[in-house]
Figure (spheres, rainbow, N blue to C red):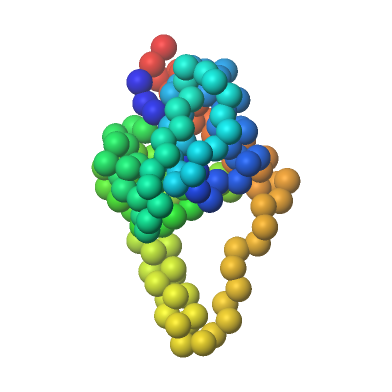
Length: 153
């Protein structure tokens, strides 16, 4: 049975709530990994893994534990790249699938933008989460859960 791994340090509450409801509804286990405890309902299908603070501590736990066919929810591109290499599925908090077909280009763009910022260029950041972003995540997440249920039935 596949697992859901959430890079919870930067996961918006609305997305966390969708994952909680999906895990409760389907029984798929969701692991929330962060360097601080998050309030989660006490359910057998939900686990909070608190890691010590430090660069990439949560990412390293997810990389170590995620397996082929698991779903990782993250917008962290190096983390996404590492778990994609292990065969896991990756979805951003906006519902975008990161795959072997697009992760390298996304990493290259990230590196390019970091170079611009290091040279003093103001590049801005991502826009805030909109209702459409939350809806897109919910729809994409539900498709993954539905696929899992139908492929194991």
